[in-house]
Length: 267
Image (cartoon, rainbow, N blue to C red; front, side, top):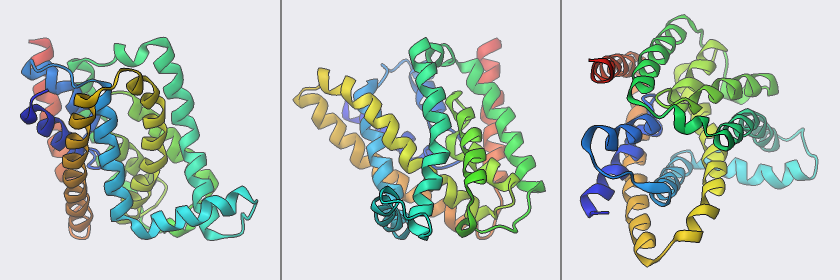
C-alpha cells in the first residue's frame, strides 16, 4: 500500500470509529467508491489498535478503574465499583461476540458489505438516533450502570454488525433510550468499545500473523499511529461539542451521505 492510502485509511478509521457515523461503513465505501484496493485484515487490526489506545488514553481514569477491577472481579468482589464496571462491560460484550462469531462463520458479514445496505443503515439508524436523543431523558448517571442496562445496550450493539449502523451510534441510542444523558451515553458507548475492539482484534490477529511480513508490520505501525491521533482528536471534539449541542449534526450527515449512497446504488 502507498503511504497516502495508509494515511487515508487510518484517518477515516480514527475519525469515524467513535463518532456515530460508522467507521466500518466508511472503510467499506473507500474501495467501493474510489477503486482503491481493500486495505486487508492486517491494516484493519492495526487501525483498530490505534483507536483502542486513543479511547483508553482519553478515558484514562475509567481505564485505570477497569485495570483495577479485573483482578477484583476474578476474586469474586462484586461489591467494588471497579469490578462492577468490568462485569457490566463483560455482560454488554457477550451478545455482539456471539452474533459476530455466527455471522463470520456463515459468511453473512460479507454478504452485507454493499453500498445499498450502508446507505439504508446510514439513514434508518441515523433517524433512530435522532428519535432517541430527542425523546430520551437524562436522569441516569453512568456510575449507576446496571447489569440489565448493560445487557440491553449489548443487544443494541449487535445491530452494529450491519455495516453502516455505527457501533458508537447504536449504543448511544440505546443509552439515551434508557435515560442516560448525552455525555454519559457517549462515555458508556466508548467504554463498551474497549472489550469489543479487543475481542475483534484477537479474533483477527491469528489470521494476520500467519501472513505477516516486515512490510506489513511497517504499514501497520504507520496506520496505527495515524489512527491513534485521528481518534484522539475526534473523541475530544465530540465530547467537547456534546456540552453544547445534540447529536443532530451527525444525524444530518448520516441522512445526506445515505441518500447519496442510495442514489449511487440504484441509479
